[in-house]
Amino acid sequence: MISDVLADTKDKMAKALEVAKDDFATVRTGRANPLMFQKILVDYYGSPTPLGQLASLNNPEARTLIVTPFDKTALKEIEKAIVAAPNLGANVGNDGEIVRVTLPELTQDRRKEFVKIVRDKAEQAKVAIRNIRRKAKDDLDSLKEVGEDEIARAEKDLEATTKTHVDAIDDALKRKEAELLEV
Image (cartoon, rainbow, N blue to C red; front, top):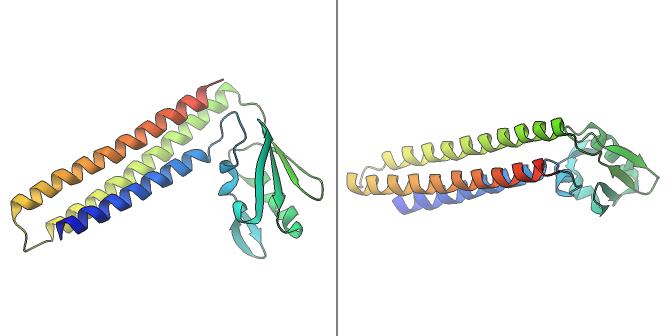
């Protein structure tokens, strides 16, 4: 019973940590990174589809990304979605075969904006982890056939797991901030 609750909690917290790291990857630094474009949604035949499923992404240069659609009819929609994407400010060009995306040089103010965005994403991830902890604590408290000592031990394990995952988010945040502020 207790081990099931703790194992489930660890899995959920690990997934929340992975989501946070993926979100950090979508915030651009000075280089063009295909991960930044993976979550851009393109209106493909009436349904929002992630760009990563519609095209191959590669970056031949530091600030340039080439988007090669698998279906050439989606070229205009892909271009529109990239232009409309928040926090990119990219110059987008379409030659009928590919979409060439050129990212402008980051100013110091823009870097600070991105740091704020990353901190906000980190805080959202921490809140998600705390919500998982709260649910697990409620589940532990609802167990009737288990002794108080065992519940207290399980709650200590729960707190240690929570601290580990929150610290991992903080570490990822520090790395991303350093990457963003690097000129």
